Length: 219
Image 1 (cartoon, rainbow, N blue to C red):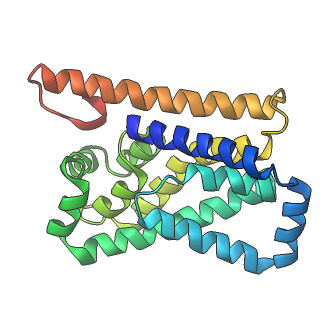
Image 2 (cartoon, rainbow, N blue to C red):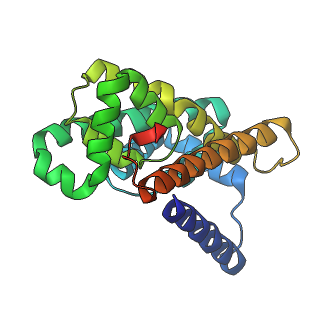
């Protein structure tokens, strides 16, 4: 969790530095250029986003950028589609690569996710997507080695990523209007989900330090 916050902070600082040195691009001009690309621009974004989903890379910045360029509702549809493509590809790759390869990347997360799915089924996928205690990419690969089916995995992923995706997209779409209710709701949602993830992670760490078994999200 702290790594993700560090990466996000680094990206923000890098963006500030670039903006100070090169100037902030005109958003309307950027939007016009993207619209001139037509469907090709959307396809390119989906490919790039799906590729980032296959790698352990921060995707929130891409979601916010989509909101900034495409607007809230179109960006929601585009980002969700891209995330689902990447999540399904990694799910299949996880089963193809096998347990040894995925365990090297997922580590203890694989056993934790497997135990959660055995206990809660599809709801486990919704929970780990909703509360960011396991990296998105790790869930994708690790889920491929669990007992969950493709349909349940897909539906759980779709439900679980909606709030976070909407928050990131809204931060981009309404970022130029920080006083608007849309931006306030987005920032609040992002904050609540992040704090929930931190709280769960700290609680689990305390239980493990005390000698209790690591039971996943409820630990």
